[in-house]
Image (cartoon, rainbow, N blue to C red; front, side, top):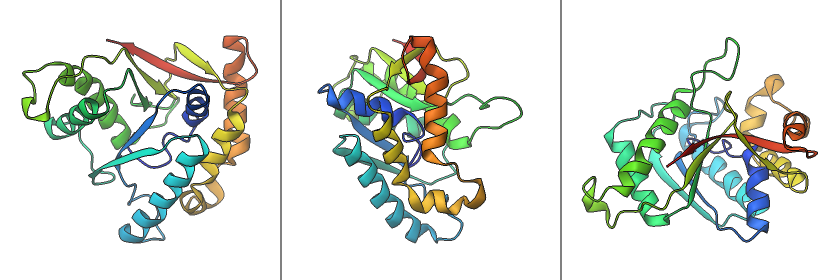
Length: 219
C-alpha cells in the first residue's frame, strides 16, 4: 500500500479473516503518509500515523509492518520503486500480494491519488521483476511464488472475500487512524457506516451478508 490507512478502507476486514485462518500477513507501506494531515508537520504526522498503523495492525492480527520511506505524495512508478518492491517480495516471499485501486478513477468524475496509481503499477511489474534472476540480481534469490495480486476498491472487481464474521474488526482497524480521520473534518466518513454499507452492497454477489470485492491479476 502507498499510505497508512489504505488497507483499512475495506481490505483489512479480509485480512482479519485470513489471519484467523492462520495465514501469515505482512504490511509493506511505501510512505509514512506524512503529507496527509494538514494540521501537523510531516515529522509530527509520521509519529502519529505510525502509532495508529501499529494499533490497526494488532486488531486484525498482523505483526509485521515495514516502510519503504518514499516521500508521501511524490511517489512515481520508476525503477527505484520497482527495485524496492521486488526486494520486499524476495524477502517476504508471498503467495499473494494485496494493493488498493490503482486505476485513474474511483468512479464518476473522481481522480485517484498519484501514489495509489504509481504503487499499483510498480507492484505488478515488481512481481515479475522479483521472479527474474537477471533483474535486480543484487537483491538475492528470485521469488516466483506469487500466484495473484488483489486490488480493493477497483471499478473492475472480479473476486471477493466473505467478511461477515470479521467486518467489525475491519471497522475498528480504520477507527485507529484517528488523527487522519479528524483532519478530514466534516468530510470524514464514519467507519462503521462506510465500511458496512460497501460490504453489504458486495455481499449478495457472493451470496453472503458482507464481502470485500477485489480485482485480481494472475501470474
